Image (cartoon, rainbow, N blue to C red; front, top):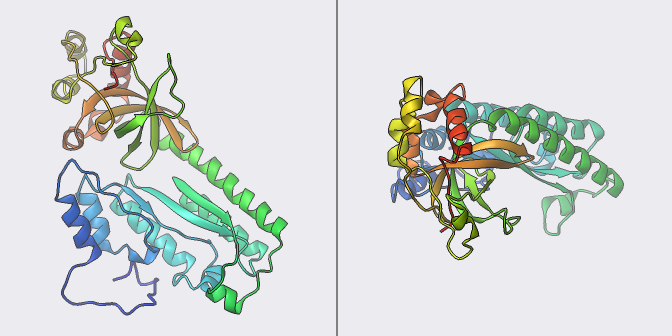
Length: 334
């Protein structure tokens, strides 16, 4: 089954009994509720409603989809034999975002395909403005052998025109992703799977790097409980709240709850690669986010907190950060 009626398939649809891709994703997700499941690079035709519904239902199936458009022009898409129109693609985007509201969408774009006119190029820019992608992979067209275009078309767009159009596509993406992350990410607490130290980490200013459910990279500093911890390069271990402590605290963060929160004991836990951390996003730098770790978490525990309900106005995040600045919160490297 295709994503919607506007998509065609070069291969005969199997139909009938048997397993489908959504069944495979569900089976993998069932292995462990703490295991993130992510898949990438299918054709946009391969997002039937059943797959989208499964992604919305399962918290460990990541809310991130790669949906390569290649072009925003229906005529270029036809020459590429992509099997869909601009309108069908936009309908799919609407379906995805209505089913998975917090989804991140990435895409591929090619500038200067055979016969591409200036109007067709402008169609691509307008598609990017309308969709506002979270990530994009953008290239100038380069003809390859043994393809339909190689056999039937001419690579007739001048190189300087290709590069000018590619730069315009890149600039639109960069502008949009900055605005999108500032409005959609900054101020939110995201669950980050810690991958290791950031490439820019250095003595005296060490930082972790990890990925959100939406596959966005987050860099956040490694903070320490004491000066001795800070000077211990062999085993950097600090203090942070545990998930067990944060749950009742989040449910009492108002008025008297604030005073109770400040009196809670410090729970010493370790944080390292492979752990989940609840991270407050404080800044967006293009498609990379900056943040601050608040507590070590689990996937199920974080999902059960329903932070969108608890801190829709940002109050909880602000209180946690204020306490962190007073030295109440610190995290360390294992």
